[in-house]
Length: 201
Image (cartoon, rainbow, N blue to C red; front, side):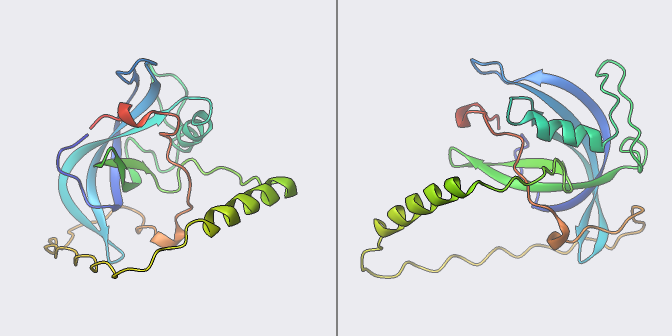
């Protein structure tokens, strides 16, 4: 992963490579990688050009993560052929680009970037059965009853975030305006089932 973290937010990029790989762990965990050339960042509802950088999405293919990975590839219009890849989505991710989301995730007290499609891998919700809700509620109440905070002095307030420098005004913008944060569906990252110690930095 990159040494200098990019800010969390909405970006615009073009797909420049897709392939397969494995983590360097005992299980040799397989994943699909997609490399992006990132050229814009959303700010105040507009696209702001940035120095082009290459970032990578990793979508794992474990039993639980595979449906999310396939959903993401379907959004790109991927033909399923890693030897001769082609994409049919409109807009085309290779020639026209699309919107991406950068989030920070943490493993072993270290932060790294997680790049994903805007709203990528959305899964149909499956409500719990009544019995599962009842068991969870009982466990939750038991846990909360045993975690009464002891009296003491309040902690120090969090430090104010560092001020960031304004970016230069955009000269041109991608075809579509940035998606607003409240329009982004929430989903799980496709790194589940991967041991924390195996996440590369």
